[in-house]
Image 1 (tube, rainbow, N blue to C red):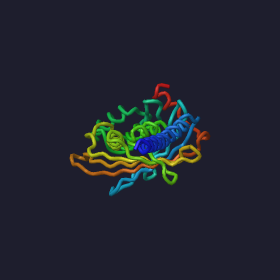
Image 2 (image 1 turned 180 degrees about the horizontal axis):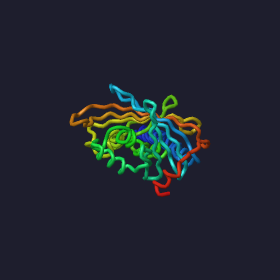
Image 3 (image 1 turned 60 degrees about the vertical axis):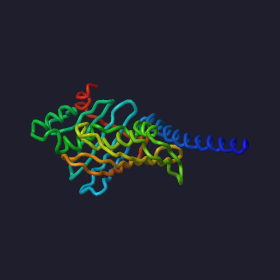
Length: 240
């Protein structure tokens, strides 16, 4: 009996170590990307049952410096520049902060939304750098396992709720309910190649509860060879 118990304990500890190694591998890969001089990412989002496909987002970031994120729809490109917890959006009247964008929309009778300024622009300004975000998401998984070259696991309830809320309008929408989510990570030689975050939740849209499932896939490239170009006007607006 004692030998059986000992074997069971050893097997349990070994399995725990495997799970810890998978999570550590993800966090180490995220840190490697975050510590890189620069990198480019492309984020695509799919919403099940939606009548439209959200525009692809392309981002370029430099370590400790600026990040430029862009999305394009119908021939129009929306651009935001981020640095730390600050961000500015390029508009027809020049670079504007998130507060100025909201004020302009309200003055125009948009109620804080509508168009590139209130919709895509607001989401760009709330963009989280994927290298930094992934390490935090890894800690918000119940466990991560590696199988067939993919490290995957379910998000915790709080983690799923946080990700689900990112589809809202900057804290103006009610908190999502029944949130569930998952994380998948593809590594190549220990480095991040692709990340996929899937979340489903009940969200309030125009006073009506709707079940929404959203999948966002990030792909990384040009690590160490990305050029981040920021105009002097954007830098001035950011106070740098």
